[in-house]
Image (cartoon, rainbow, N blue to C red; front, side, top):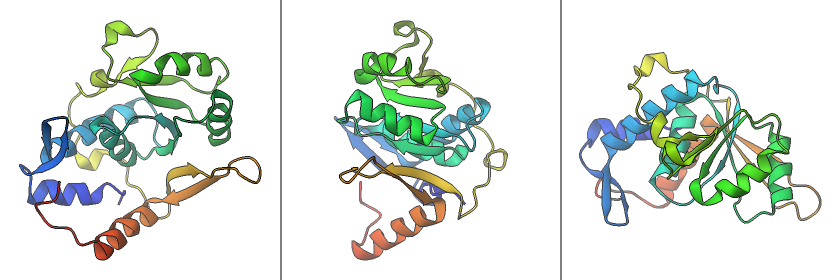
Length: 203
């Protein structure tokens, strides 16, 4: 199973309970689960199963949906520190072999300049922007307008398959990509819950 599995459990047991509260708006577990599925279906259609996807995102609900949608699509998420220089980001994305970027609108100008040096990047998806604001990029909201796929039509991820690649600080040389599997991420969820007990009322 992919590491978004705990969300499926929560959406099944507590569909209407609040999963995320952000700037006065609340999103239920069922809604987050559905958005992750729809996004996963769109990413599969774009051929991103098994591919690496760089993400330059703020701390907001779309980021959560992106991470979980990528997991369900069988894509490999490469979170990029937005505080890195353009050259450092270029190194990370090139080293990871990113073929797609999911970015916040705030970083669009930066990414357009960066993309000129990243010929392997085929797609750029922009969160927080309307399609009319974009050039050859795709609005995140556009991907969420598709139909929800059947769970059985999404890729099945093995516990040992790569889920995320996080880059080290590179204090003794170039940053190195640390590969984490779906299984490792799931055990991280379990260990976190054991170390800091959760309740069904947590948001």
